[in-house]
Image (tube, rainbow, N blue to C red):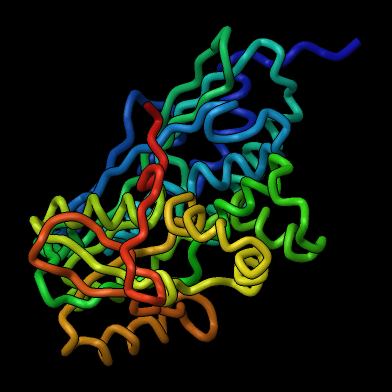
Length: 332
């Protein structure tokens, strides 16, 4: 027989209070709310995302990776606004049959990322659910007053850039669901890792403040999210499908099955940054990217230009406009 799972407050004390121990904002998780001091001349940046079993992750995914993806998707929103991460709030909804070992592994994933990103848990809630496991995380950040990157700053004539590589995560989901079984083991593992563990571009986002005119992170798909940016700015965009930066694994998959181009452009879950800026700032943005992130910086690739007309047009190598079944992911 297995021992009963500890109760709500025991779970908090055992697994989540230690995650708050390094930050005075969390007050040891002993009070009703966190206290967040905001530095003079700064604005507080808040973002929330939820993940539900069977919708955002598979129930048999490693719990540590589920926790890390939950945190990182929120940090990606902070990155898109040029913010520095301060901490996070967490709401967990546990089933009665959730093993304590699963909770422990989930907390260990958060602890690992707290070390990487220099943040701590500062509060939240723990509840029971008769339905699917679900988690909601609110990330807190700060940015200099009036300096946050916005979706609404794109102007006609601006160049469009994306960070990193695009489409890996969507292909990784296909690997996970058995719909991409013709790649070798190394490519499959790489694509799966990109799906499970995105890399929020926090350092790049902060480096882009004062350089980029507009920015958004790519969660629903490049075409869809660029469309959101264009709608907020009252502009349109044209991008070249052939300019899309691809990993070697994605390029090999596309070479075997050209039909995957739509998946790369619309699949989502990349959590890379898409940004716009005047052509005159091209050297400045590349210099910023070169010192952001890990050694070697973060690659930025120009993929198109902002236009005065509305909508996002994707052109192939012959200049023809491509059409897609849908621009990106929608919950409903």
